[in-house]
Image (cartoon, rainbow, N blue to C red; front, side, top):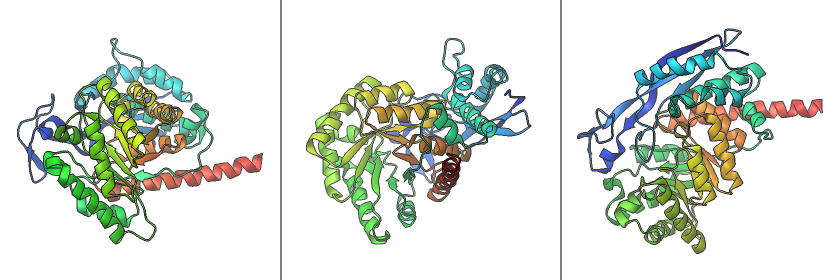
Length: 417
């Protein structure tokens, strides 16, 4: 089952790449633009339109299956790969990856990924390349087997056909109040992220942040349908540590204080602090988790920064250094590794959240849905973009279509049996 040809098509991500270091340092906003000089290498301005590169595999029957490469919004931060540069990625893909693709058997998904993603010059390929190409290879295997991508994942990892719907989590971007209302009206499972990425939003001693948390809970009760009870999930981009200090006890105390303001809700706090390295992050997050658990708090810690690759995720999961791990798909690399990451979290009894970035595309989001459902992750991100409607539609509809197909497959198998 060989690939006949490979197509490459430059494209757009669904949001922007942002220089997190410059924003943390106090860059102000003028409309949608950040004012000031960039800090992170390769950024020509603090906010850059997200670019992508599509890779198309031409199969024996002339069907073309696609995958999309891109970076995450905060590229180059927290130990991540540098900013995605289309020309550079296109050159590396053409020279190194395309010849490998023309030499693999695409009917054997995990083997094909392993061969195509072998190191080049003693270095791992760009994670963006792994991500996009692994999506295309997954679609190729599904096309050849006449199945869904989820079934290819289930077969590769010896998993049963899934039946459970995976809860969907939406993020608000800067249009916080309007987008929270949209999420509540659409009865999103987990909301709202809140984009607490600056001192202005977190505030002195975290008071503005706590007021926002209380407002979200109140608004949910005001306009939500009867019985609607979402999980509240806030990404604070390390601001608890920056404002309160990097002592685990103080951070846990603050998180408990926030949880006490919304006692009727399960509360997720993502990226409470950045301790500067993966090892320091693991040690201190494990302490925070332990303190919260010993108190019986309803708050859960979610790790993002410093937990990027499959190996990082393994270290955090084994150390119980989070209640929930964000598997940030473009940072993990091969989407097969995202599947492995979910299973690794489950084996260690740690929550698995298949995330990603607003900078992704419809194709990468749909592939992520198949991995999330196949592995039965605890939740998945509505992506791409920062508009609730589009992302929730893309991810939610793909999941519903997939579950309908899997249910039909299950009935067929039962009838055959």
